[in-house]
Image (cartoon, rainbow, N blue to C red):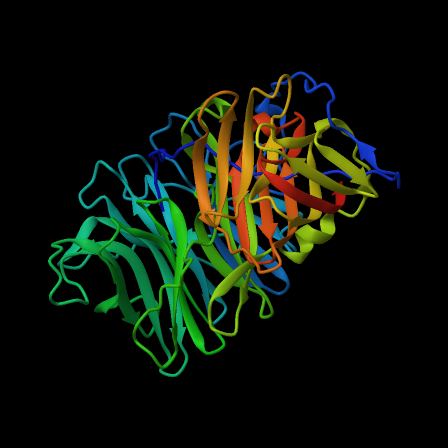
Length: 512
């Protein structure tokens, strides 16, 4: 949970566009005019976000999902971005498929400016004996402690009553000003409950640690959800300042810990066998890039999903730092046989876009198109590319990429005018990286963010990308997701490209 500070991250975001043609004959697009249509600067304030939800006014902060009777109740910290001394009340949006949403507005209001919950922070909703318990963080930077755990209850998930008698503050040895993001685990074997809290401590699991203070997930136990007893820490991490928004769940034979690393601004996970005490860190522990934060999970009994937010940028500028809060983004988590997790698109989002439309290449170089299969052949001095017309609103792109001899290719966004400046999603096979780069002609590229890229032996990549206004999410081989926000992408042309060798984008399809 981050209360009010805006996090400073390099600019970046991801998107993926493609096109197809109904013509069967090859279309040679080499040696043609390379000027794309002129750039537009749309007003971001005019954009509605219905797939990557945001309220009509304000933005989505840390999601806190709860599932019941076919409906996902996504509580979240509402970011009004005003100058009031109180901020971040809990709001809620509901969905059955993560593709369409109903905004139910405020659930738990803030307190007054002089009260502990002058600002509300992240927490969790838990149901027991017909009562819903919302444990949340009460934050007030003018008080000491700044943070305490507080409680509101409901019998219908709509009307909430704060319980002023409940206040849990950090125990001795824990940081009283960094004590937040409670979540509840039920231990059915003992009939007890565990509350996990993100904090810092000088009392850790590793007795010989030389770090005086370290990130810790504190653990309390209770039999009634009201009286809590401190137990030994659930998790300890000496590599970061704080493991925010912890989430713990069991899937099959494994237990999983998901948290947001306050230092690298990414959502990570660890796992272990239910019979083991030691956590396993996977080779790629990140569940997305740095434009997806505060992810927490929820299950409907069949699938498990992780919901986070894609941040906006100050003044809606690609050159600015990220703000805190933004648009809701949700992925589906899929367990592998060895216990690791991969990312896939939620079925509801996949199925939302079914109207298949034809895209036409506007300009290009070193490209042939036959039946919707674009083959790009770049040489040592020139990249190959094909530029497509601007699109608006929300849409889906699907394609299959086959790297024949090229080791660097991908998608360009904001490919307008003379294409002097574009934002490129780069598949770098030589380095095993998926990157968002800012490319400027006759200048060194600037890497904005990157993720490890697993390169299959056949060098083929199944791609699904969802775009809505300035938010874009690309899913690759049902393994990884890469979320980004690119303002220049919105309503401007896009392109596919190859920096070297030959690559084919086949079965390129566009859906609204």
